[in-house]
Length: 258
Ligand SMILES: C[S@@+](CC[C@H](N)C(=O)[O-])C[C@H]1O[C@@H](n2cnc3c(N)ncnc32)[C@H](O)[C@@H]1O
Ligand SMILES: *[C@@H]1O[C@H](CO)[C@@H](O)[C@H](O)[C@H]1NC(C)=O
Image (cartoon, rainbow, N blue to C red; front, side, top):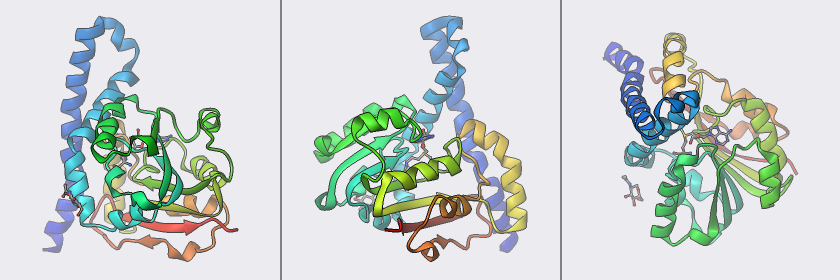
């Protein structure tokens, strides 16, 4: 049984990688049809389109899976003025406790999520409490223009995003600065496995996974969160004990030291 679990854990990433290969091929054909060979000079546009499609078509599956985890209760802890990192197709929008939310600024550098997010906001009638900005957390100029400045956020929410950003350390320092003293960093991420064999599998999968699915499998997320600045409750980070999973989870609600 343990061997079967181990093999299942090791080979599971292939499913998403294979789906992503098909979507990249489809996005490439579409770009060639629309813009001809000129589209090949902007490969990142083709990749953005394919990665967005991947998250959009797997959205319901992820929502159903996250329903079985701590994610819904974590998102309900978000309150006040909120910065949501990397919303993707907006899988968390329906989970906010509307009575505790003043406003959500959602930042994602991939421009292909606008329609999916707008459709969800309209369905829940939350259009005037949620703004999608096409930029990264690092783009402080754009954030500042929107009023997202140092010490201004009650909550920063990060659900599976630190695996996808360029540099976790600098993103986390930025997050810490944007929080007000006493503000909460609410996160659910995945990181490097503590199981030696699974950690090797993560390293082997990572080149294909990061190129096609768009995130890194073997980061030490916990260390980078802790190094961002002083937290009131660093001991409250939970690391899930899932030795056979290539996506072992880590989560928590950390308060910025006042
Ligand atoms: C795996 S998806 C997470 C989607 C969503 N948070 C959810 O709960 O389903 C990671 C997202 O992070 C976004 N991302 C990558 N780099 C980013 C950055 N520097 N700032 C903000 N978002 C970023 C990606 O475009 C992608 O949409
Ligand atoms: C997830 O849970 C919410 C709240 O219980 C429910 O409304 C929603 O239909 C569920 N979504 C899926 C895809 O299971």
